Length: 97
Image (tube, rainbow, N blue to C red; front, side, top):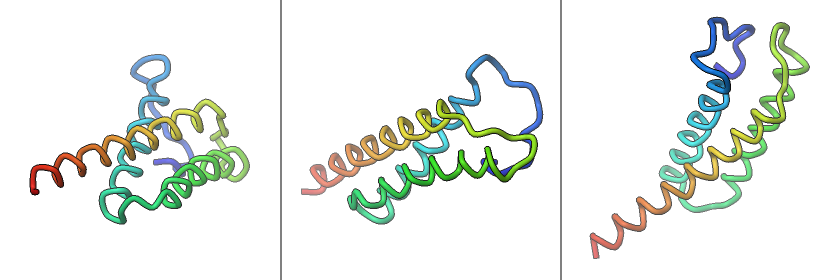
């Protein structure tokens, strides 16, 4: 989805692409946190991926453009997904003990 030459279709509403970015990166960071643990290096890798993906879209894909606001949505979503997953895991651990 992030690297499709042309995402096609009409947006549902203004800014809907930012919601998609937010949700995708929340899921990515949350699953990384869930699977690999609390290493903040992983979160920084997700942040870096957000930046690199926009650069690739802006430079290497015709019909696409890089957008700083997409990076902001990606990073915000990743931070939310990471923190939400951390909270869920803490609750599970406290219930288990």
